[in-house]
Image 1 (tube, rainbow, N blue to C red):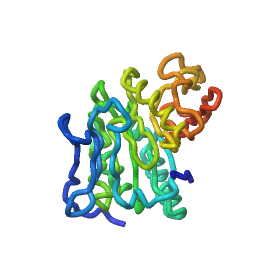
Image 2 (cartoon, one colour):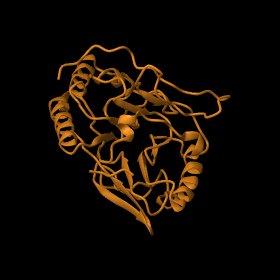
Image 3 (cartoon, rainbow, N blue to C red):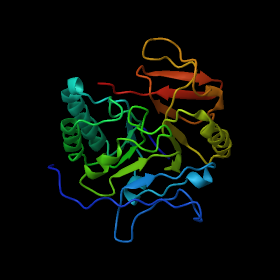
Image 4 (cartoon, rainbow, N blue to C red):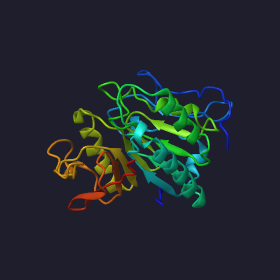
Length: 263
């Protein structure tokens, strides 16, 4: 169950594993025979069973996780963002915790500054803890969200199995992970099933980057679009990036917590 709580080295490109439509277990990725690998979920699935993702043993062994989101790296905030990344790693290492990032690492959509990319990768090269990331809307390039700017970060870490990148809805580590999706129709069936899984004890938490109706937006207005909080599973912790004011959106036994970092 999830509990929240040196120099860059040259490495071979991380291998990715995604099963096709004809595979027995679509959406399941794992380690290579020769050792660890960066894991990327990239298969669109319509049921939670099809969303299952195998993660490296290192991640599976962690029982504490530090969660942050919405770093929004840009030129004017780069110095502060580097300090945030240093402190996140230090706090996670002190607690023997992994790190979860819930999207919007970058601020400007569609292009990356080479200088900013190099500095961010340099900061991540010093990280010592396992990492799980999902992309937010600012990271994404394609309308469907599968193409995004978190992919280069796989090459930043000192261990090839250190980063698990979940580009599609995924189930792993006793949790459901939902990257940002503009079109909520693909998410709604998964949320409905997640409610049953949570009731049956098969789902312990949920992590997402979501626009939820009634959430407090960055301009202090309430969101009128997105997902209905009543559609989320009840009785499990739910954490989301996207809006930059820490607060809860609740409905009966369902509560979603917006967590941020925000430079």
